[in-house]
Image (cartoon, rainbow, N blue to C red):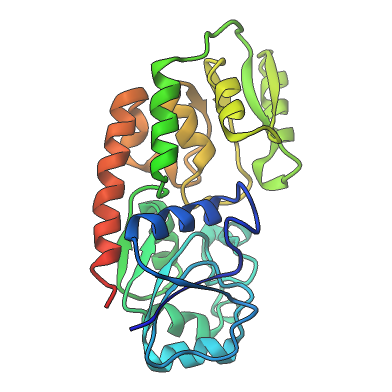
Length: 279
């Protein structure tokens, strides 16, 4: 049977994109000969094939209906795609009115062989909005083998902490809320430093590792948060809010080698669960 991996974009399209990095890691771990197809380029569903569907905001509703009929897919959910705008926090208690959740979206999750979430927080927001399906919590962002090795190297040779300033990600992405983090520090007379986000991955992490704490107040729910997770791996305290996935997972209290080891185990278990649904 032909295996397809369907997504809006892949790692080669958006270098450094969180969902795209996770998809690349999943494909690498599964070691299957996936045919990659973009959601805005697919014209028909292979009735004899099987699909792993990731971000699919560009997928037509007609094709979603076709998938629902064939039920030959699982979903790797990186976001909150039961809403077109993906932000449950626009509503009181993060619960959207029925009119804002198209019936085809509900069916798409319900008819999937399985829906994989990154955290319990993410799954809870789906359930709170009445989305039904065979839900499985992966309990973390799926980091690649290269990422895990990089984390080990960074922990083995950490960047010396030479400042009392709190780190803040310098991002133009409003979701990362750089302005809010800076305001928090200013209001509380805390020294802070903006870390440029346009560095190479290793350079960014080495720079981040030179701080004792990260201030991070995202303005919308994040499924997990690579930034917060990696700050904990590097041993930083994270001044944040319990309004996204990572801080609410049990492993968030760990740092350094124990956290890396824990994530390795969780990822292995999660990949095995995904694998078990492939034909």
